[in-house]
Length: 59
Image 1 (spheres, rainbow, N blue to C red):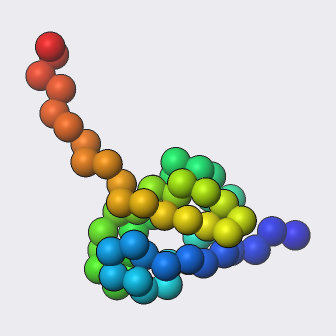
Image 2: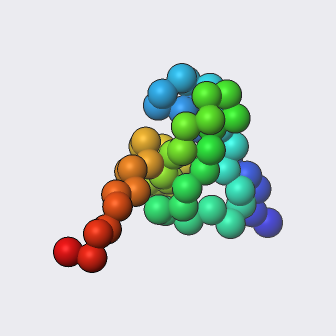
């Protein structure tokens, strides 16, 4: 049986839950500060600020 794990937001230190089926590179949103976080490790869960999506002007 898999269970949700938690870790802290690198921005505000709030506890952020992750779904049992979360994968590395998944994006989650911190419930406190609403920043997007990228899962960079599991067991234990570890987050980094998600990279900004850059515009691609077809170059």
